[in-house]
Amino acid sequence: MLFGAADRAITIYTDGYVSASEFLQLLIPSLLLLGWLCLRPEEDWVSDGNQQLQMYREETLSPQDEAYLSTAQARMNELQKQHKISQRYILPFPYLCQIYHLLNLKHLENVHNFSLGNLRVIGISDVKPTAIGGTIRFQTVLDSPMNVLRIWRQPVVDVNLILHTPYMVELNVPVYQGKRIIVIFNVLPLVGANHEFLVDIYSDLEWPKFLLQPVLHFAACLTLFEDLPYLQRLANRNLLHSFRSSQSAGHPSMWLFKRFVDLYGATQNAIEPAKPKAIE
Image (cartoon, rainbow, N blue to C red; front, side, top):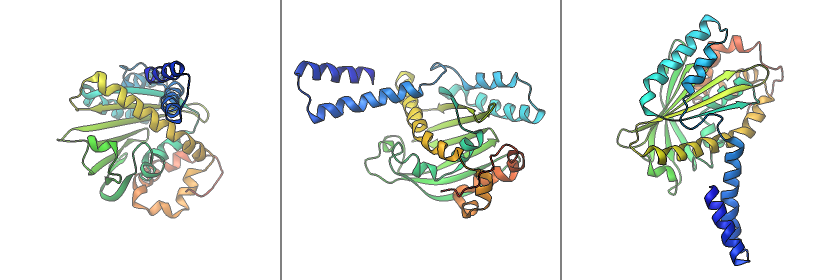
């Protein structure tokens, strides 16, 4: 992005004339570069989110939270050989906003309409509760024939979204020839209305790491950039109250968040602001 913006700027300076197409060619990489600088990960490109969880465990935690973090680390250790990138962010939004966002299937269509190229959720094929979470399998279709994701996957695939613990969510996406991309999200509550957001991406794609890592970093930053306005809107709502009183509670696309509410809603009530509003 940096080299692309610099190349366009030099070309325009040499010509001494700026056409509409040249302006767009300079504007697009400049905006992408600005977005990267604003949302750049705090950890270096080869770090592992597992290390962050270990640091979190060194604090005083309840036995139950210790068990949750052990579950998260066990899954990440299982995938360690396929680890590609880690990103870490401190976000000024309540932890529950991020959990709601991750477990709401419709956000793939609405919030990430641009980055996912009009991807559509067309059906729920299976749900499976576990003692501390659950799994939902859903079908997605690439609605646009020009969608760049067609390079990596079939037009219609079954995707798994898994709530491992109240702090860990996994998105498991088939790519091609049995290969997969797995994204692990860890959402750790902090003091005040903040949370730590860890993103780890794993894959058994046999692409050179030096090519795959920049693509995955950019994709993760772009989706987070899309998330921010939505998270801000959620921060002004009492999500548990709104969810329980809305029709969305029974919608199949919200099954996994309903599972979260059934398991952990009582403990979340104590920290939710009392501002009941309807959820879009």
